[in-house]
Length: 278
Image 1 (spheres, rainbow, N blue to C red):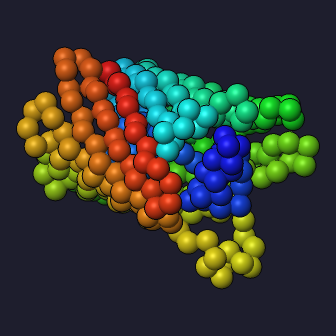
Image 2: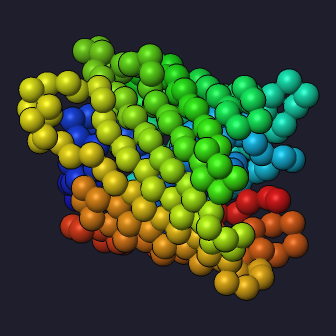
Image 3: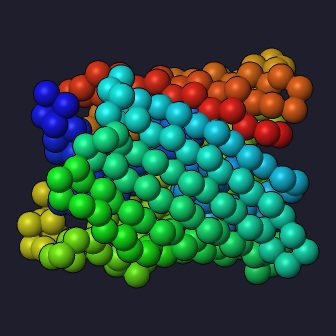
């Protein structure tokens, strides 16, 4: 039964054609905003969506996150992330584990970001990946991400991120992992309101079937509103398949406790919890 549920999960992922290291949203805040975080990327989860966002982070940031996809222990995702500004740029470090005893993905990310000007920054992430399948052994590879972030105005930001730029592969057959292109916008019409939108596309498969539109671009929409201190409300929407999300953020001293709920068009819901500082 566990193998069947894991297989269903893989088949119903929004980015088709690959089975390992799909792009999974992480962190309760980005999830609650529908995963539309490419042009936001302003906390310890930011490098996962766009490493360039770290360049505009002031002060040390850390986060611990956990979820069980569709409430299944064998589809649990754990992550610890850390961001540290320095005099010559901003460094990020993250460790992630997805899966259980039968199927497990492990990754360690080392990220670096630097401002090119007052309004443009660039970032890169190097990711060490290990895939382990019970009875079949394990394999490792490296993956590179590249990000760009630009402030078009004081209220509007534009982001671009390419995941697995070097086309890292796994297994004896050197199977392709997803290459994901993300383009996003973040608009803050008011100091207490943030709106965001991302477009995601798997660019690793350029077959005629895909070019004909068999695999649609994924749309992500999100909003974050600080109704009153110390509570924040977040809403999100994702397509292909359709998923809705809602979440709350609570500030308690130097810590932020974030929760997100995400529905699924075919499977059970998923709950996310994150603790961030500051």
